[in-house]
Length: 289
Image 1 (cartoon, rainbow, N blue to C red):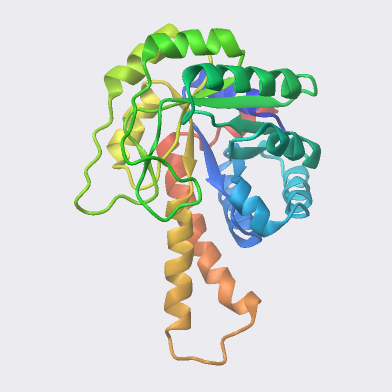
Image 2 (tube, rainbow, N blue to C red):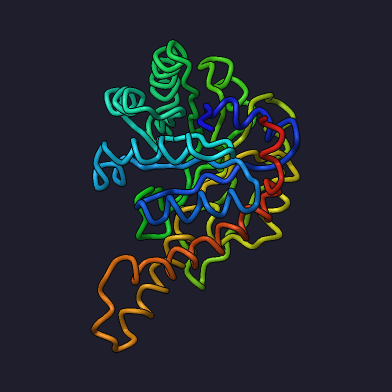
């Protein structure tokens, strides 16, 4: 069941859970997370970064739309970290039902201007818009990128930004980073900022960089009002590690994709299931019927 970002997150906000947004960087990952969400009866946002779309080609969106239309769970197709007007319009024409404009690295005024422009265009055709305020950290090798120094989202600025732009959801910076944290890095999430933003705003809040954070921190973030959490590195690492094991097994006869990939997909699926239960989105698909 194909839905928009506004539709999928409205229920999450009402029911106090977070929708998982899994970055599907391949058809195998797409099938793995859809299967996990079907098993757990969870809504899902299939997030695709512009660099992933460039690799997969536009035709991949037809595959995602087909998967969404063949399942009873709610599925939103989300452009992750779009940063140009032309790029986002292209995604809307392809069939994305939610888009993110990330102008957080630019000035506040530019962020407002570009976000308003995207909202005007997207809302005209019923597509939801997510924007970002503050900056998310970057731990290294991810398509999402980030910055070396996190700029925390200011609650009062968030309130003004939402009112000025008309966005449907807001990604906030409370101390997370894209990718897997190095062993020596222990992030400290600012739940006081989250609580302040939640008290001043009414739209769903989004947490980027949700991979590798301690479960208790993620659980607390959901309880305090986060309604969407992006997961990319965790499922990709599970897939890659299993594939590495298979390729290093010494059996040179293993080469067919239908032999190589199913165990990797199962590994990614199990991680996806763990996240679904952590985000408390399991069993919530019934609320969309």
